[in-house]
Image (tube, rainbow, N blue to C red; front, top):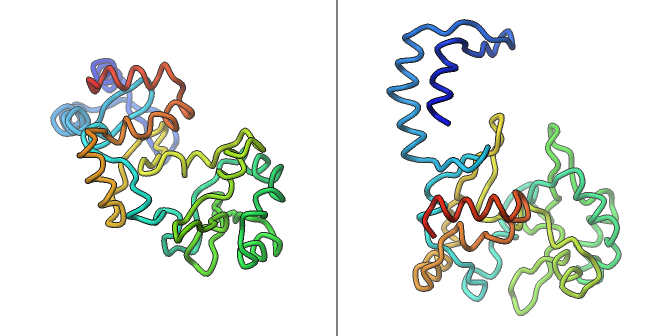
Length: 227
């Protein structure tokens, strides 16, 4: 893959201002070969058209809800997790069932308008008082997902938004998906739990990664990382 890209760079280079290709000079090629390619090879794994940060394969991680209390659903933030456009209808279709698990405060936010906001073209779930996701419900002091509860009760085939399902993996789009591990202090118990069970982020996120890219893609990832 990298060799092909090197050959292409000898012929052309993308001009972002004009949105077109131009002939590439040798200085650019030398910089790319000397700096960029080694950086990618050392820090990323290539699986089809997806770049995966090596930390996803190397970091041990298994959620420990008894310790973190569902912290990833209650971060202090103006908004909650990102949504895909096609996920909105899936949530809307069971919204009344979801609301059965929510507190009056959370229901009020949903009934006051949409459960999400369009922020500069990015769809984001609303939060309550700049903290908990609007779909959070609590069991014994642990933050749970009301969308997921409806799913586990057999009332929906939609488990949760893919961005939530993937956590602690985050997806960035730079002309193609780049996966990275998001390290936060609240997940320290998950790191200990992962080490104790010898399970990496890549293995912990098998279900959501397979959901997003397919089982064949995930099998290839496991083969590449030697797990």
